[in-house]
Amino acid sequence: MVAGAQTGNFISETLAHPQHRARNFIVELDHPLVGAVRSMGNPVNMSATPVNYRLAPPMLGQHTGEILSELGYDEAAIGALRTNKVI
Image 1 (tube, rainbow, N blue to C red):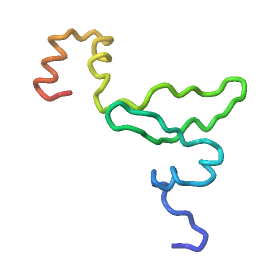
Image 2 (cartoon, rainbow, N blue to C red):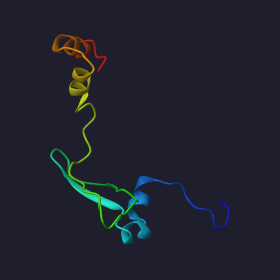
Image 3 (cartoon, one colour):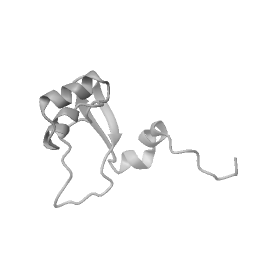
């Protein structure tokens, strides 16, 4: 490695970086299935309109049915996609 070169941007390094902690870029939310989840927050901080973190990240596929319904799929079609392991 070249002297002074930075290491990769691994999630663990990013979440532990002192500058991110000092700037409050790390957000911790309670997830109903896995407990406390840490992730990067919004890097834009505006004093008059602060970011409000309300929801933890969704689980894989958590909103698939809702999205497909909004796209016009009925329950039978969504069920068929699940049965055929498309989703």
